[in-house]
Amino acid sequence: MEENSHASNFITEIIDKDLAEGRYTEVHTRFPPEPNGYLHIGHAKSICLNFGLAEKYNGKCNLRFDDTNPTKEEVEYVESIKEDIRWLGFDWEDRLYFASDYFDKLYEYAVQLIKKGKAYVDSLSGDEIREYRGTPTEPGKESPYRNRSVEENLDLFERMKNGEFKDGEHVLRAKIDMSSPNLNLRDPIMYRIRHAEHHRTGDKWCIYPMYDWAHGQSDSIEGITHSICTLEFENHRPLYDWFLDELGIHHPRQIEFARLNLSYTVMSKRKLLELVEGGYVDGWDDPRMPTISGLRRRGFTPESIRNFADRIGVAKRDNVIDLGLLEFSLREDLNKRAQRVMAVLHPLKITITNYPENVTEELDAVNNPEDPSMGKRKVPFSRELYIERADFMEDPPKKFFRLKPGGEVRLRYAYIIKCEEVVKDENGNIVELLCTYDPETKSGTGKSNKKVKGTIHWVSAHHAFEAEVRLYDRLFSVEDPAGDKEKDFKEFINPNSLEILENCKMEPFLKNAKVGDRFQFERLGYFCVDSKYTTEEKLVFNRTATLRDTWAKISKQQQKK
Ligand code: ATP
Ligand code: MG
Image 1 (cartoon, rainbow, N blue to C red):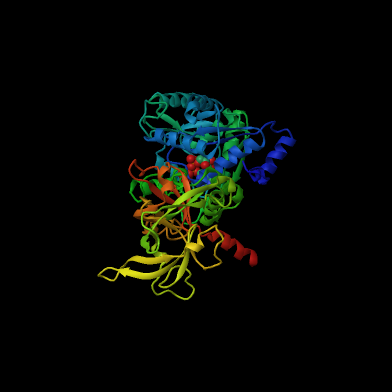
Image 2 (tube, rainbow, N blue to C red):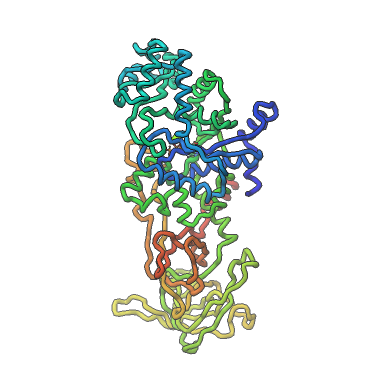
């Protein structure tokens, strides 16, 4: 782990103080996902924070699924969440928990509050409860059922549990204060009746605890010391404190931080699900999705995501992070470790007319100039090659240093060539270039002093194999797709976010590439072998990132200001 993941911030200051004052003697955090979707980059921030704090203080971090809401597909989500956390490089050891493990305990706690006169069964309808609740500027009204006797409440609550009532007939509420300026304290609902199957408890329960009732008590049961959550729970803290104090049980300290927002992205699970179910993307792990599984398929490394989380740090105020910063963290990591290779995405054939037929030279190519220990490889060179279409212009502007009629360019690791003739088909399309090479200019031999301004990549036509390459752009064409509440965020989907190139030419080294392997295609960007569409017959590459680094440019500009 990078050293700066242990840097100080306002959260570590609070923890340091708690430890110094003896409020806690250890640090025990948890990551509490609700298994109703796949994890996204925002969750990654929370995971890095919670597991990172445990690491920094030699403490522990639990994984707890907040599965208080019975729904259908939870098992798939539970498995994907576990996989994503492990992939990020964190380990909950033997501390995998489910809020549903605590349903019995929570029921007992509720009975305790009823007995103290601090909770009651309410029989108003949902609409009435909402009406009685008041508004931020007007106090609420007490329910006519608020003063039921303890005996009656105990009896009704037990019968709720036993399944004697229909959904919505009764709820259990905390008895706090209907005129509190904090709406969360206006007798919040603790339990509702739902005759539904739960992925773990089956049909044992037909009453389910509300999130606000389950969350703090779950933290307490697990002995969590620092319960770290996002800012929207700041207003809920007085309620959590009230429950814990009334029950007189272990009291974690809750600390709120600002959630991560990223430009050109949506992060709410509901919206991500809409993209998946509507077929706008090809699943939760579509490489354009901000999900961890999408980023993984796209070619992100766990290190780059962890470094990103460190870089953005934690704050108390909401902000939006530029997507470019995530890509910057990725490039920084891949630049150091991705094997470089040559691939031609839009091939144009060239024939070197003065190079002998049926001869292949094996040229030395550097695997990664950033890391000499990665060594060299042989690249075959022959009379017929492919270069990138965009590296030739028939009628180029002045500063075009690649290939043009009569012009010269260096082929990477090989020779300087000169374009002698442009071959066209009957429609005037360029189909081939006839070139000559200068045998004295072989790279690395130092025989010739000849210099040219441009160097381009290439592959040997006879030795290359074909692969599919998928180019991605941002999924949304505006910075804040969910910002305009009048409009559906899906209207801002970028129609050109995926481009599929079928017959790209790859240097033979890539033949052994395996799913998930990452490469830098020289001059083109970072690519990785796709896990979904790659078959025995065909390799499919995802473009992970371009080489162009917009973030470095932006931060330089900002430094100048
Ligand atoms: P959504 O609003 O998309 O449904 P959620 O917050 O309800 O997300 P949970 O599964 O409850 O999703 O989140 C698990 C943990 O991850 C919570 O502790 C939550 O605070 C944290 N988390 C969720 N989104 C972000 C984010 N964008 N930035 C930082 N932490 C986040
Ligand atoms: Mg949540």
